[in-house]
Length: 109
Image 1 (cartoon, rainbow, N blue to C red):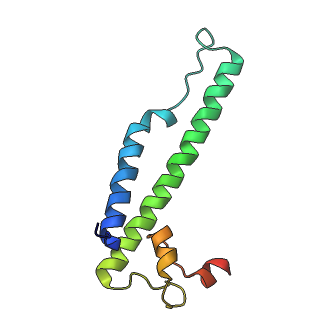
Image 2: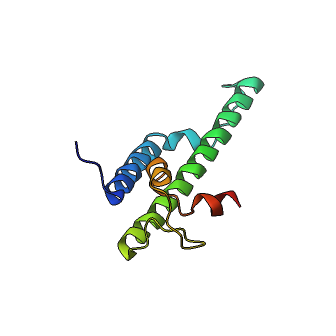
């Protein structure tokens, strides 16, 4: 079995994220505050669920931005190099997260 290129891995992850975001789009919609339909605790649960869905959506959008930035680095020939210090990012680190922009030293500091 052949290994995926960084670009293929990033594009596959991007498509997967977009599909999940599309499926979960309704989860972060505004909560109705109709007193006759929901009790106070049910509304609180719905509001908490909405807040959690919104945070998850924010994290997914952040990951999409990281993937898009990594795809730009692939196209420019800078992929695999730390955007801070310019040193090469280890293959193990890139295998774990292909969109990572930092080497382990810069990420730790």
